[in-house]
Amino acid sequence: MLRTRFAPSPTGYMHIGNLRTALYGYLLARRHEGAFVLRIEDTDQARLVEGAVKVIFDTLRTAGISHDEGPDVGGEYGPYVQSERKEIYLSHANELISQGKAYRCFCGKERLDTLVDKRGIAKYDKHCLGIKPEESKRKADAGEPYVIRQLIPDGETSFQDIVYGEIKVSHSDLDDMILIKSDGMPTYNFANVVDDHLMGITHVVRGNEYLSSTPKYNLLYEAFGWELPTYIHLPLINNESGEKLSKRHGDASFEDLLKEGYLPEAVVNYIALLGWSPKSDREIYSLEELCQVFDLDGLNKSPSIFDKVKLAWMNGEYFKKMDPGKFYELAEETLKNSVKAPQVDLKKVAAMVQTRINFLHEIPPIVDFIDNIPEFPPDLVVHKKMKTDIPISLENLKNAYASLETLKDYSDAAVHLRLFSLIAELGVKNSQVLWPVRTALSGKPTSPCGGTELCALLGKDETLKRIQKSIEMLEKHVQSLAR
Ligand code: GLU
Image (cartoon, rainbow, N blue to C red; front, side):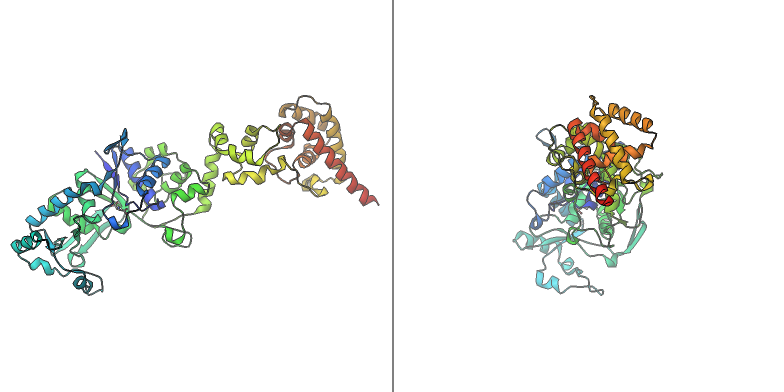
């Protein structure tokens, strides 16, 4: 069975790249009916951040990414937590010592600080490998502080990565890395390998910053006699300036994006396509659909650019296809803050704006005319293409007023019927009546719907009041021209 995992270190926020790693691991497991495991890699106790595990949990839940197993916490699966598995790593490290594949190192910081290889990179010189096993044990038993190091044998290793192909390294470039620190805690590098094996992980999906450490991990697999997993190292995600996406550069985390008004499902869809391409031009995929189509062939090797303009467009697409009831739920607060006119049906306003926005915060300036119609210049009642003038628009407005004044039913359909019969009666173009009416009701060159819908939305009293006000304004204007 295919098994993947997401193994975040609890940093306190969810970097978009990490969420993508989680997503790809999840999609791969779902696509192949495998299992997806969540493991918190918190062995670096100095860098623990309070509440960080909750951020991971909440993010994954909001993104719809669920894991399949783990310790029972209040009726649901918790994550596996490395700091609770300390003994497991220590016993594995001791096993390697007994086989001569790892050794205790008693060197102090001062000595270590002086050790660099010919490239100037810190590299341990295997000094403590010279200590006889009995002596090493005696020193440890006497309480001398030590770390356990992996013994990198001479030679060369190569391995296959699904994204990067064959990677070859000479062991002389690899450091005898620390497996167990002096506080008895494992390093990330060691715990990660032991857990991936013990948890039966078949496919390791992670960022490409681990590509260069992977040969060392593979030597650990070899030392234990374990089977290697399939590696899928993901290329970087860059921001628009071509820098690696990071909080340090002020780039948004998943949480920040939600605060900025992006929908979780749009973000998930967008990041699925950051580094993976489906076999078609289609861009909108729900999480369920991604679970059906995600495959390793579509992974790209080149870094992807996190393009917020594209993400904003995708957000708008998600609003467009959202169930109207759900959209109303999301938009209700914004609508209530923007439209106070009691006769206006906010559900109708919601329906008008649903297809016109990328963000909820774009709603207020679209609907502000409902409560307060702005002053507008007289020539706004003449559409550029109408080939008419202000007096003609004024005349048509007066006719519209007379027609609508006697109308009782102010539904969109009834207003529509009435205005279209007026248009037929006058023998004018539709726009010659509808444009001035729409302008008189909205005071804007664009509005979220046409004139007849606006009449229905505002109701009879407000409609007539606004048309009358425009008539007066236009009359004054025409008179001033005549003088
Ligand atoms: N704990 C590592 C991180 O947060 C995980 C790397 C891996 O997936 O192997 O980057």
